[in-house]
Image 1 (cartoon, rainbow over the protein chains, first blue to last red):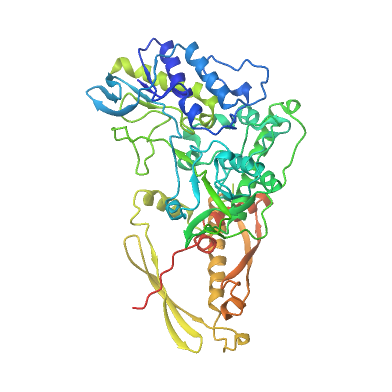
Image 2 (image 1 turned 135 degrees about the vertical axis):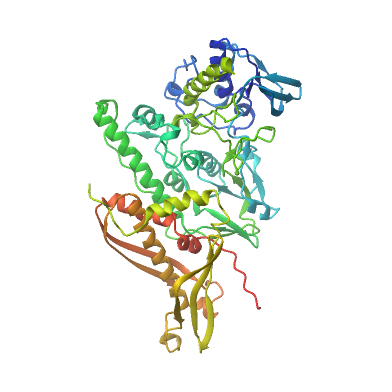
Length: 405
Length: 182
């Protein structure tokens, strides 16, 4: 049984069908549900079309260097579901999965099922994580998460405080500032990347140079790597870089990490400079590995001339305090990360922080697997492109295990 | 390959990290200082005992500090100004971080010097202007490091040291402070 008919669950289904393993895909809503209902209107995929592939299913349109809109992603995944003849049961909400004999007992709003194996593919972004001090924000300020946000028109009047400088945070900050609102962006640790490096999409480099192929068991600090914010990228037709310098040029005000609320004031860290230095250093190191790869593998001719990026410009003094009661800020968007929701999983597989314990998608209880999580097996797992290898590896394991049970 | 030795037992720290991952109680430390008014604006502060690893701990010996104010503050200057102790703490913490990170990254240090400057508008503490804060307006630390490493590697050492510094965090982020009368 596969839980979730997004790109991950459908990829699993495709490989299970290839092996003639009888299965169903249970989906709480429709195929590609979260792409359909839990994304803001302007979002495009971070991966360029030529790299956006699912097992046996590739982009065939006129713009290989472009980025799909959410409507196009939904269509792409729907087409894949049809081509893969995935046995999807939509509007089937899984409310419990528990161990039962040599398999699993699954309870849904459509009834009970028994199965030998379960693949958890319900997505990594079911719930937006918001810090506890959000409760101390004055009621006069509207609070949204990216799961609620659709576009600027939805927000009340006034400035917007965007919290977090991941791909989500920088994209929403840019869109809201463009809409005529003053945006303040609270920036903690972040991952800076140019959209295009030496005339090639930065993901061309990630893909080609092998950075994306780094395995979960080769990563120094896996817990940290899996929690890393998404890189500051946007998929725009202009292929524009969306780093903090781009936002500053647009008029966005940068402040440090939001640390606390005290007496109606937001208090920000005075450490913005260092998180920017760290991000600059890491970006330069990564780009140097790309250069090295191009040089040593004779790919120089495929890329443009060497390119350098200005360090992140940090204001001499950032604001440490912002009065949330004064009307300057009308709304807050918490782009502070997401987590999967496992409340329905009655199998002891979560660690003390509520994260799934797994080895490259293979869980301890026999027959239980996960797909579609950040850095599940490789760095590319966090992107659409990574699901093919992951789903193949996980279903290989499943297929080897089934007969020996 | 020559052995890098900055005198930091990084292995012990890495081992502690692994052990404390599964023992959050033992990781809870309480640092203590005891102060006694001497005379005027001078006090004597002693530091010896602390709590950590689940039990009372003690430094090898007691340290005694005199906190006073300079003559331009109309004080006898029998010790440094309390706010200067924050600079002492920041320099000590960041430098320890540089040495530890360098050891962990296999970088031999030859010298690590820093100057720490805290800009302070004293109209705040004098109550001369209620728009001026009491504490530092900003702090600037400048490191001069001689090591077997590139400029970029040295910058990365200093950045990582800030990332893992207790005092840097305490100064850059708000902390709840409770002051009571016993």
